[in-house]
Image (tube, rainbow, N blue to C red; front, side, top):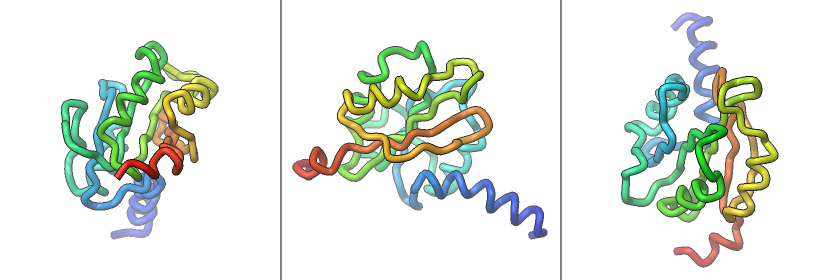
Length: 147
């Protein structure tokens, strides 16, 4: 692999690294549409070693990738629904269009909806050319009793 190719591959895997997903993880994808970042989806599938599961999947998942746009409905309700299949230490990656993109969601909407849904935002990343990602988890106290 040439130096430029290695650098490019390393750069691509940085986003997958930031998502904190491991080989064998089950990742549910919610809100997929034509505008989703196909490169990010491919990197996640490569990292976990399997395809993403859709919103019809009815078993426990390690992470949820939720593509969310302004106008998609009630974010609190969607986050509560996304929590249902999530493993005790699972994470929701809420992916929203960046500023000035169609469907942009104000960061304040996310920071207000997360605690209402019983989640806290722990970090944010640039998840692609057109998408931002917010890492949402259930607070430790809330997770403690679920075994």
